[in-house]
Length: 213
Length: 206
Image: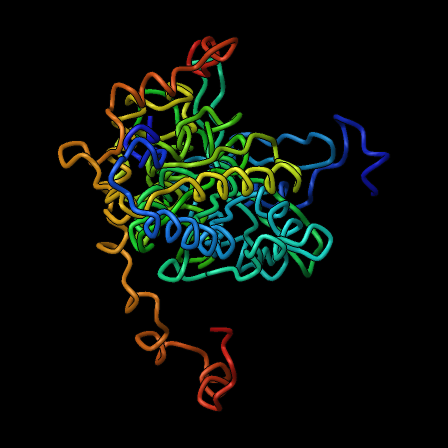
């Protein structure tokens, strides 16, 4: 099916959705198909299990996590949604998973880092901007804003566009954040991680190939 | 603002005791300085593209003695800040400025560097003159190469009026030790005050 003749509603769902429903039953809350894209709402506590199955099952093989993000709706009653975009390169399928985090509950959900290592920075960004805590993430800290940023989570609806502090205070705090205290040349060098690199890359580095520095 | 504590050009007559040799030496040194300004390009956004166009062959910045981009601040004379500066980059820009030796000047290129431009939000510094002292502001979004070159000519004019006997051009300007800023915090708040429709622009007011 090509994008230009997809109806807004009523397009056939991704077959993975039916497979998920038959396997996980009640843990799959709802399936939406909009513009031919399938969105599966998953119960919060089953998320990691569902993702692991999607990744490992030979019929599904969702081997690529393209995005992790969150949506906060303007309606203050509606839950905040965390979104995962999964892609199966062998099966040519796209699947969107959502978990609803209702108001009044902790913004916490399992990290998918044990399945997709690429989720590391994506989840850090989501934590930085929305304050969603991913349990099981190895290093959950801010990634876009600096470490000492204390004004909150910028993409939340209750965050004023200009931030919470006055401009002078923001500037004072930003200037007080000494980058060298956090980022050292040692941390950035490859020497510490040399043993962890793949064999082939180690060979290339040993042979003296230029690394662009 | 940032300019008030910079050395003000003094006329030779006003200083009185200057000799003929000193004034001639002034004009010689200023002539040399203004025609060999080495820029430190601090390009963060689209203004940097326009800056590259200015440095390229058609507009040819080399005509003003600026063909040598100094990518190390320690050999630079003029910091050209081209593009928006987020708060995260503020300590970096401050550090680069402090690493440049005296005498040094700064050109703020474009609307974002000069005032924050359209980025009146939580992440962007509202004008780099709140971080470092600025000599010339070039408006535009981005400025055309002619605009930048006019700013450079203005800076050369300023350099030409400096006075060797003036101690201020050899002294590093220190920020206020209490606030760590060059201009008072109240002035920064006033400068950053939004105007026009943007007063009501907030996402939290549903």
